[in-house]
Length: 173
Length: 274
Image 1 (cartoon, rainbow over the protein chains, first blue to last red):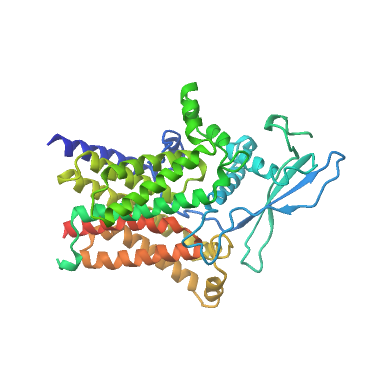
Image 2 (cartoon, rainbow over the protein chains, first blue to last red; image 1 turned 90 degrees about the vertical axis):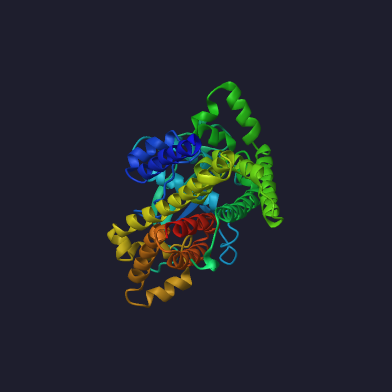
């Protein structure tokens, strides 16, 4: 007889935490740090302000002789228009990319030391990894790809990072 | 109640297991196909995930254990095992056997996969883990009697909370109500659709109407466990079509299966309340 009561109390506590988790975002952030498994959900899908822009990632190299190359686009997690509703393996790439952008747009301390930013930088660095380039820089541009009167905005432009060194030794100037 | 609509607790659990196994299998196949994502110097390089969450570095032995489990290519074994478990559950359900131990394993592997995915985990993974945890608690407490009923009610509660949260937050936002946010989403290449945008652009008040329908559908889905089984089934049908449309237009393929997994519980609760 005790077991159903215990199970009920457990679900009641979990349900209340889930309910609280939908409210104040500052409280939610605090709860998130104590919930690595993500069992306190966030059900605010696309609320209150959904993503209304496409983000494009470009990178360019600088040679040892300080010659700067052309910007090249690096597609992030493109999906097939035809098969995307059953098969969409690129969604996690996009999630990391958007998470980094969201972080960069938030006010506060240096976001370039965050794990997602460094993962993005690391991924960009390994493009043309065998090339002779010395340092790499990237920029993120936002626009609405399907809108005719779209305006391009620069979201972030990084410094030049040395290609083959750890993060702490990457910044030259 | 009409017999066509009868759903007992055991069938409800089986249907939930079925849809969650499809979701898990699909998710693992995508991870295995796109395995370069987990390689060193890539977006989900273990080195960065480990820095993201301090629990991975709680002590030297904990770190060593996680390194062995989550670094590349060891992590592919985790995805492969999860895929095999999901396939085994699907086979067991097809053969009419109870896949209880496999469901426990799928839950454990799902939680591990979420830990590994860290900042790339999405809402579908999260809800799937919550439902799998609930199924596991149900199995560990005997998969019968009142505890099974309470577990089903909890799954319905989570689905209801998800729809109501999404619906109410949209309803209280002026740009959602007037259709501007929907227009903005559909104008993107990543979540939008050129053909659909073209059609809606040509119809006055189209975005406003579609947005209002979306809000109304989400709120209706949220209250559907409290409706009589007939109307509840109709709303769940609309919900399934909605998620299929979202998968088609926005590419949220696993959300379809995850939310579908909660529908038997919603319908079961509606049946019990009336």
